[in-house]
Amino acid sequence: MNKTDRLKPRSKEFFELIKKVETVAVAGHVHPDGDCLGAMLGLKHFLESQGKKVTVFADLSDLPENYSFLPGFSSITEIVPDFVFDLFIAVDAPNSRRLGKFEAIFKQARYTVNIDHHPDNEQFADINIVFEDFSSTSEIVFWLFKYSGLGINPDIAQCLYVGIVTDTGRFQYSNTGASTFEVARQLVETGVVPVAIFRKVYENVKPEVLRLLGVVLERVKSLDGFFWSYFTLEDLEKFNVSAAETENFVDYIRSIRGVRVAALFKSLGSKQKWKVSLRSRGEVNVQKLSARFNGGGHYEAAGCEVSGSLDEAVELIFKAYLEQINEAEVS
Ligand code: 5GP
Ligand code: MN
Image (cartoon, rainbow, N blue to C red; front, side, top):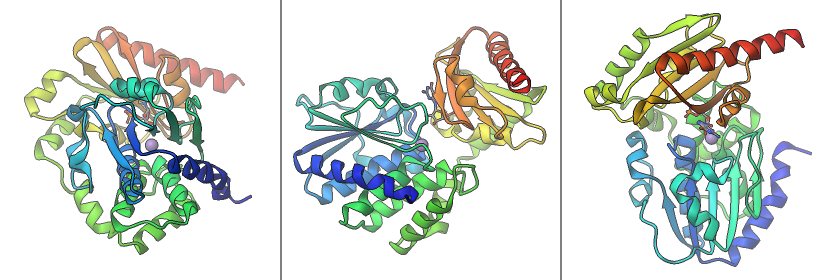
């Protein structure tokens, strides 16, 4: 069976459910990235074209502003209405906890759907449309729409294209495959102009963000293939940068020669709590590494939270990294 054929039965179930509902809530993981936003807004436009009443939820203080050009971005809200939604669609989230403050609406909704590509997805909804061998949730959403036979418009195409481009590192990461290019081809045929998206997403960086990146890169240290750096809340304030604008900092650390794992420690509220972004070059499974600290993600891109001073936090993750590479060498 062809890879995308596996999505056909899920698409059928999804659209049968859609016929039964009127109000739809859509939300993704906390700290939404391009894939999360692209898939959520793509769903919004598609379902609205089917006459549904759709609300896209996200924490507004958490939204990366470089995606504000996406159609529908300004309609994203954090205000929860007092009615119960017929349907809640969770996007790019491996479990309901990752929905953050919108988990409560998920739990109340009459029906739930989970669309995701994380290997650690907990199949937590009534309908689970989970395929880990797809580049992005946006790519899965594309095939869902495709198999509905209803067709997509340029707004939907733009949202899904942004999701795919960002989650594949512009078609370079290991999750990029033939079906990714096939979807991109179809989206371009539907009106997406790649260079226009490139300019908006990648050539639109606030100078302050690059200055902070410079500081973060100056702080990089390394030991045994483990490369790390950090920033604090004071750094963000000093440079007038939001955490959402630092989404790809860790990728620069991964690009350094000799990296096996890149780690970026970001202080969360206090200097005793760190959000850690981990990236690998394929040798080390950082999803497994993060899971040891109750985090998760993908084989080559994952995250978790750890407590303690910076040195303690680095030590914890570094030790787990060493254990994991030693285990791999023994087996
Ligand atoms: P990032 O490092 O860019 O925040 O996240 C990389 C990947 O790991 C994304 O797929 C993201 O959803 C996932 N991830 C990051 N932090 C966590 C976490 O604390 N828990 C889980 N389950 N996944 C995370
Ligand atoms: Mn994703």
